[in-house]
Image (cartoon, rainbow, N blue to C red):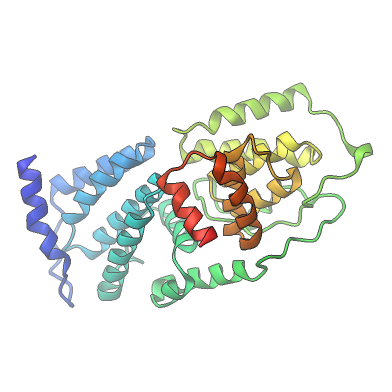
Length: 318
């Protein structure tokens, strides 16, 4: 413990990096092992431990901008999953500094799926003006502003449905970027077209619920969403199916899809404050700030508070 504290005291002053890149050297095996450990902890769903480990790992990469950018990106993802909004913002500022000095983000040692997940969270949490000030993130600012255009407007209901979101508008299964609103109707058709959920479909819904466990990995959450939305699209009149698909979409940050399924199923009742919160977040991230605020106000009295909930309450309610 004393050795770890000594190392932290030694490297913290080094965060004021020079204006020119240092001579490239290999990352020390000790910090490489910490990076691997932090990634494994994240994959297991132990996000708090991952954030602690990655934070130390990043200190050993101060003279390797590309490696540091990759480590900071993973650290931000872990902090986001713990709901620590302030730590996420601080890590983004460090990443922005690395990018400003070394333009290292594009060459960061980061898999495509992790990069896509980070950019989705940056677009959700960082103001567009801030993103636009950093060349590497200008496209994110454009995306964020484009999604905010229909603020306060709900898509016009149409008869029938267009089926699942087109593959061209959705990322590969390992990514969690938000997809654009699809053309599916937000309102269920009238009674004559309704049909009962079959036993096989009921089993798929049960399996989807199991995959939505708190320790589930991204691939499990994506599988749950695919299973749930099949039933929801086949039974748009089923409130249960719509809410399950909406929750699954929320868990992988597909905000427009989550908002669409919530609108189909209607606002959850006061006995389901967590689902109400999910709907409020989905609406807010999709551009409907007014609708999000109204629902969040109804959910808060019955909702178990946490730093994550409080952070969104500040964002949505001001």
